[in-house]
Structures are given as structure tokens and as C-alpha cells.
Image 1: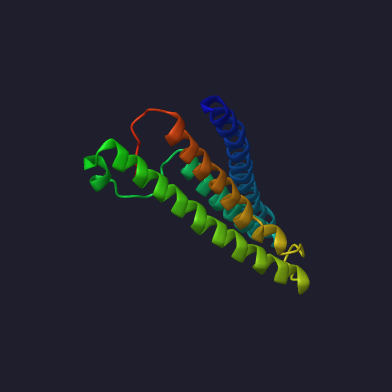
Image 2 (image 1 turned 135 degrees about the vertical axis):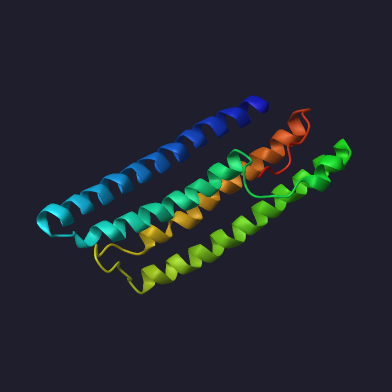
Length: 168
């Protein structure tokens, strides 16, 4: 079972890392091009700032999943460090279950919001794309986070390692 968790973590991690690298690299190129264009041609493309903003939003939500995968989301673990092993394990499972529940609620709410966006055919001001595209960052990023929370629960039960606690 541990190998399945590791394989899923590795492939999903590669997808997440690739999306973030592509998005942040694109933002760098777009902003650099915007600065050059403004300086040399006294022209700023309307779409450049908007696209950069949407790419950063995507990076934030995919980055949330990366944080869950690497166990680097914010937390206080002083009490957890003093607990006996079984209590640590139960607490870690509980924290991961809470993470799943909160993420699923947010996914559902974002899905409802996207549904309304599509219903009213809302488009972005400059690029005239459906606003559902930038809004999809939330359910996709949080879905990746849910997978990582579940994989962490499975890992807690299949390995005999000491729970790591939520690191800061």
C-alpha cells in the first residue's frame, strides 16, 4: 500500500509542480514583456495584467495542494510533540479528516459559484474569457489537496513512522 501512495504522490506532485512552474514562469515572461512594451513602445497590452492575476490565483490554489503534500501548511505542534504515539496518530488522522471536510465544503461552494458564473455568462474584462476558467483554480487545487489529505491518512496507517505533525 505504501508504494501506491508514493506513486500517486509522485505523479500528482509532478503535475502540481509543473502547473506552478509553468504559471509562474509565464507570469514572469508576461510582466517582463509588459514592462518592455511600456518602456519602449509606450503601450501596455490590456490582457497582460489580467492574465498574470489569473495565473497567480491558479498558482496559489495548486500551491495549497503542494503545501498539503509536503506537510508544510501552517500549524502548531507543541502539544502534539508531547503526546504518546497513539494519541499523535489519532490527532493527525483527525486533522487530516478536518482538512478533507473543509476542502470538500469549499469545493462544493466553488462549484456552485462556477455554475452561476456559467449561467450568467460572465466574462473577464480584458480577455473576454469565461470567468469559470480562473474560478476553476479553487476546486481543482482543493481536489488535489483532498487527495493528499487522504493519502496522508493512508500513510499514517500503513507505516510505522512517528507522525510528523503539521510543520510550519
